[in-house]
Length: 226
Image 1 (cartoon, helix red, strand yellow):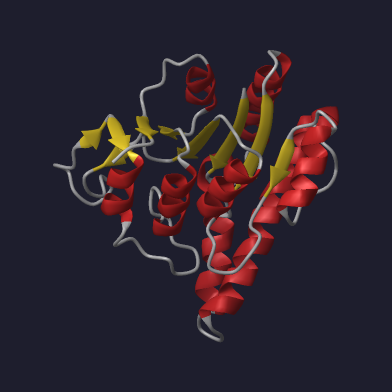
Image 2: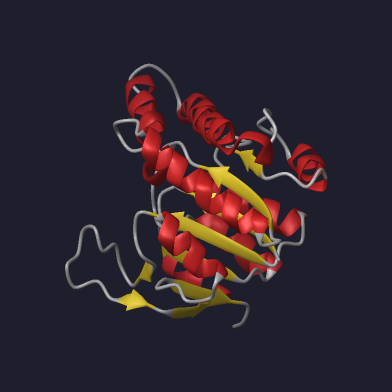
């Protein structure tokens, strides 16, 4: 199976850098590779990106803040690449052609952002479409898609199954500002729908990442359909 993971920066690299945390993610991705799956990982910027963007926003525009966020995603990618060792290559692809070349070397692809105004979720969805992935996994700090933001509303209800069209409707009002952290952003949702991508949204723990591969996750399954 060919799988693209959108790995939230806040789950792999919390506010305080944690060597053991990064090692756990590297080990689970190695295990997935060892059982025969092709893997691409698109890493978010997380706290580092949001911190730098909040400062930069006092001086400049959103497009330039996006550039700062992209650099943060690539730094996080480099940390994961270092932890993966020979399972990856010491290169963060800056476009999908480079990513596909690394994939064709039978290595794990690890990359960050590519263009301003594109979140790493949108990059992951585009990459999944580009390489004809079998599955897109959005691994974030929330355990699925809800009818409204569960971090703000205690009565938010989790949705276990969705069609891609329903996902577009749910996410269409989300922010696209630099550093935004909605569960799935509007552009990513539209790409998922356009490409008819089978997608799973999960809490991005190493254990739940493996559970997705074993088809026993506790997240939200999104399938093509009206």
